[in-house]
Length: 148
Image (cartoon, rainbow, N blue to C red; front, side, top):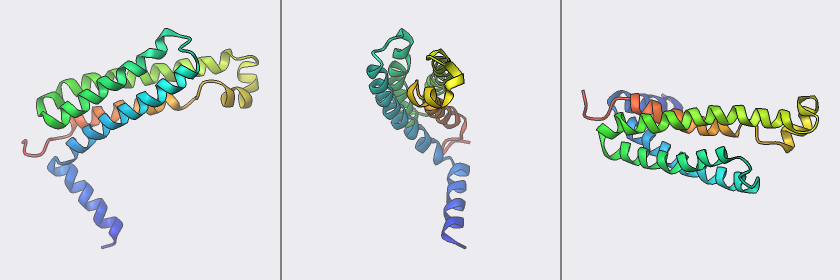
């Protein structure tokens, strides 16, 4: 079997046996910190012109705590992690809407899409926030190693 096939089989075995849940919860924690840091820098550059710009910055550390808690405790992986991850995902969807609206509100709006997409709020950046939340939701659904 090729190296790729072996890695894929090993990965599927990790999901099947429950070893992947903790890994994905930890990836959620790390992703939440990195994403919140990046969002803080970008929103600070924009002067936090809208109070809603603080939401993803606040939700990042909450997601990190929930992800680490999900690694350490199965019960928290089933309760705290999905709640925090759902909030992060919803905020990412909301951010996508607000960023698209922001591009449309720039002078020329969508008629000058090439310029405004480059110079306006990043169109796909909030999707990263939603992906981090989605990882946490998937981690909460996966079976845990040693559980039945």
